[in-house]
Length: 399
Ligand SMILES: *Cc1c(COP(=O)(O)O)cnc(C)c1O
Image (cartoon, rainbow, N blue to C red):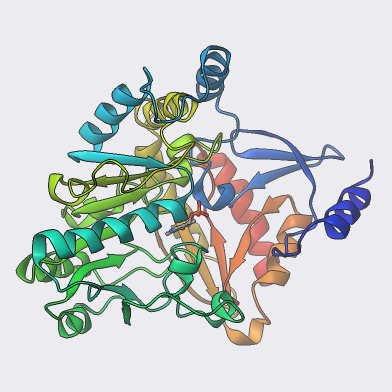
């Protein structure tokens, strides 16, 4: 079938809740993907950072295959032999005491909302139904009704009310605003260490440290949504490490499976996940043996193959090259590790057309909001691949 035929089928039968680039992909390996006409592209999106380990990583593939042949789903009515070891490994690695496995990122966010609300009532003593969670303006935490209830982005909310109460938004990167917004009923502060979908917004250095201090002083649970920043993307296992802090709860997802399977996890200290009792929460697929086996290997290869170190090194190299591009269209290049945003001036006419031009040159990327070109390749990218990309990005931005 021709690419146009696939696109026609998608458009005819699919709900059009996305506006994808018209490239029909068929195969992937490492940083590269191929379309149905065998054209090759450098993947500079990595499925929104879900394939940090590179496409179809052979070790994750082998683990997935082996587990698929043994046992895939038991439900948590029973125990399985992959879950306990996965829990131990991920908790030790992230210095957490407890973990609750879910599937998508949004489910992990929903789970933590339930947990910190219950913690607020049972531990902090907040009056019934009064618990409030502070979030940041311009946040992205997923697409459920609960989560879009505290989105500040009109596109995500319009037409979907009524919304869930109990949230308050403060400006991102402003610790003082957080402190001012805290009341005795504040249960938690939920924040991304770097806002991903919001435009690759890096807060001022010291923000997370200040936030940590404020949360501790007011007995507010600090929840870091590291679904996009976590697992090596920013050049550290978790982005919190850049400021030497520890969240009370950390959310991971996306790259937790290296792109093989939807897996997310809520990682917490004893107190927060300690509030859940049997019957409080659940998921048919959460913690299934296939997910756990895949996640164990996906995390292992990230460490063993030094992908996190590579993200730090290659990220700095990529950013330096991007900053050297002489184009009046570029307003700012920002990011950390291999989480990079190139913000264009308004007069450049939006980032989308540059994504389309890059696609013609063999690079896949995605605009975020209107004017930010996001560059987040798999963490296995090499220097020569970055040089190859830089040449093309420069020609598109300068042309
Ligand atoms: C992608 C993302 C989510 C939602 O994850 P899904 O798996 O798409 O539900 C939540 N938080 C952040 C920071 C994300 O980038």
